[in-house]
Image (tube, rainbow, N blue to C red; front, side, top):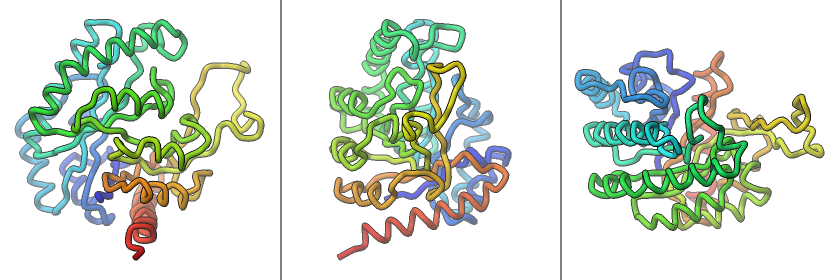
Length: 299
């Protein structure tokens, strides 16, 4: 099992400083989420050869590895020009993973077209068009992942054209590639459904990666946990908090992973505390290890 840090709260640091920071916080692995000087949101990668060499050297110097690279491109956009650009960026990102000797990448199903286009969330036809675009992209990208022996872990996300667990798991199983697996993001649990143990069990055959952070149940208190105006506004609310600050049952979460024979990547994915990011990241490393020790070292 790999316990990784998503260093998004530490993105103000130079790229070459991240391995030192991760090591000091107790992490052996980083899940490198989008940042402006490497794989930025939606646009062509900014990782040129000299930057790659410097980053690889820093990782080696501090004995830290990249568990996963996280690109975000519009591979499900029904606007073909956007989708084609996303495919070009994905291919460059895969080449970067190969150069960095990284065997895993993860991403989301995506929000479809850019903000200037129609929003998938608000239109059933747009969801269908985004799914069709996604399948076209998979037809082209999955053979590349298989050829380069790179794993791809995909998660549904609030506001994506796929927001819930079971359709996402079904589509991954339809792809039917040993290189394409499911990522369960714990802060999205209450969008997935109400029975976390059953959902983890259902995802088990393709589950390879989890994001760990706490969140409140937006459906609680008769749906009045969060009040938005006007009533019925189409919004998606969740948090990425330290363990114990929300309502996820972490004993149930980790015991369910153990029951599903999970042995993949566990990423600390907290974004809420940039004002005390060091303390948060260190706390999460310790708490994740405590649960791993509790459920994976039992005789």
